[in-house]
Image: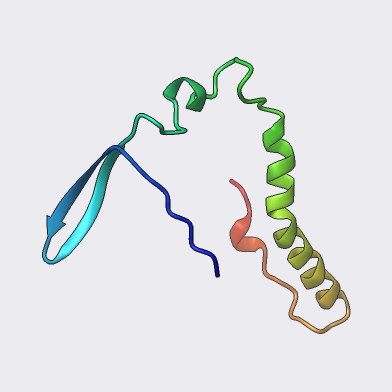
Length: 89
């Protein structure tokens, strides 16, 4: 295993409570975070359409699980789910 040394600079604010040190803030002149980039307004930094693909990819395991549950229910392997409590008003 190769260990590399990194120099860091900045300030860290900690809250000390009952033997715990809790990070409550940090600041560095070399931070990659910029508030003007983090806002999801209309600019060239973030394209809102990119979220659609992420959401579909992130939800894929849930979709596959639901499809397997439906297939199992059709084959009689699982009880048919009771969807009555999920009905909308």
